[in-house]
Length: 587
Image 1 (cartoon, rainbow, N blue to C red):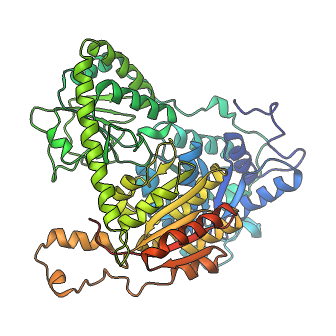
Image 2: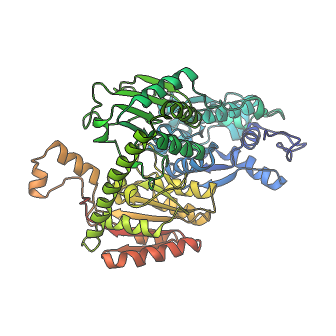
Image 3: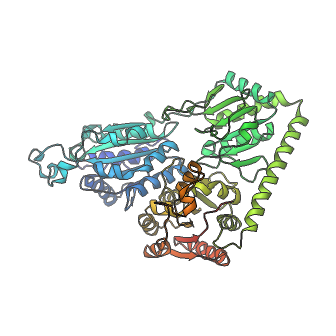
């Protein structure tokens, strides 16, 4: 329902002089920003005062979540959007706070996460024009001014702007929210100069209903018909999906299409797009070797449908791509030939495609059923091998990651929302921890590690009734700023479970070295320069320092009891970290 002055309490303080910061915060509320994730500085105080004013006057204000590190703030906003679908606001300190957002902005871009990234700016004037609070009062006000502050994140954002007048605050904030929320969603960046926040402003907001986000596009009917022709003629179709599971309706629509076609599905993206318990779910990852065996590939909402260095589409195979933006111009070079590109929301395109396919396949039900049976049998056999391998390794010392993930699979039902940042072990995590409920599995969607801890705070804020678990490597745990994230979980009462697959190294780097140098000196000598994290820090102690439950597990027989204790702690309102010392060997 559109927000309006008559449908809710006044958005602006009555009968009080207003400044730009008052309008910024009021427009946040009008647009639907529920939470402000903040790591403040000497330039953000007008926004903080505006919120304090609203709280004192009994007016609606965004919930303020102090994050002790900027990357946690952006990751939390990311997690919130995954669940709520509503862009939240992040406020940081000038250029250095913007830089400290780091790879979290990359993750938001690649996962199509709407958020308002806001940063202060050093005062323009030397003496404030005689008004001391607008003056440069410290040497940092000179050294923090950059020629192009927005340039730090420009390539990662959909839009950026600097608020140049307090009178434009409402319009600019609503424009930022509109762009961030429009499909495909993404981060925007707004610079808030101190003068624009402190200057007087008129009591006028921009009506959000007059500046709504762009709705996702529907498919062109003739393209759906062409896609149905190609898929109906296929003998070995393959579906690869990435971010299709943005809405539950899209997941259900994909299941219906898959069953109509009898094709295998490979899922690899930032959302759960297909139940991993479904008989037609083939695997996670890049689809190798299924890509090399298909004659029609349907890729849905995914930037990298396969890895050409590992498997090519057969020369005669056809590629159909459905996406909100099939061209993906933010990726400079792709190299995936597409025969039919359909720009559309999958939740709208898939039902239409299913209906068209049913018409074409109504006299070939036996053929489709036979294909589905063969696919299901192959998938079941593959899954049986995975489970058997995990079972065979349950008593190994050091603990096998497969044994860890299989144990988690036994303990975590669909009540849990799983944040997967297991990196190189991610495929095994997906295979061994079944996920069925839409919204029960998320990944960062990008390559910047350290996302899951902050994201867990945001997911829990947006969906307090859910239980949240973050599974990550030891290097990733450190990248995630655990002190800041676990402190926020304690203060904001957003408890979640963290499970560390601690192989005491940067395993991705080790694997890359092995692939690049099969006969390496590192392998022969056992020397891995700059790779080993051994001896590791005491991650459980870090957790306890933040008033979280913390345990270290070294032996396989300790694994399940420790996880059960941690789960009980989370259910009782306390964040928990279980540091599991594992081997680097996956299979």
